[in-house]
Image (cartoon, one colour):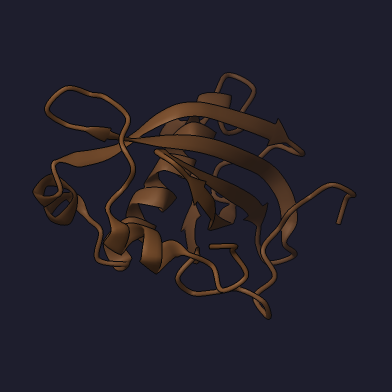
Length: 153
């Protein structure tokens, strides 16, 4: 793998902080050059984050019950090579330590079966109060669940 990549290592993954899924590239995701449009990678990162939250029990019903929710503050994408129609992609998202109202995820996208890196998306999320859209600290239950065993208190 190229230097600087932060791809998840299944031997060290913490199931609370790391989520994996696979899917195939669909025709409508392509641009005029025949590869996945760069904006689609943002959709991928948001979808895998949503799946992870749902699988962990922090889906839409739980979130609405807390009176808050996550919104994207910033995405940062590094592209390594194009994905094309029919490619099977593995998406691995990892929750990094949260600070205040902010959470950060790193999503690594690779082409199967060889695991060739396609793109890496860093997303900064902010937990906001639904009543006024103001950033607030996420609920303690969510913070505790996603706290990595190696994360400082």
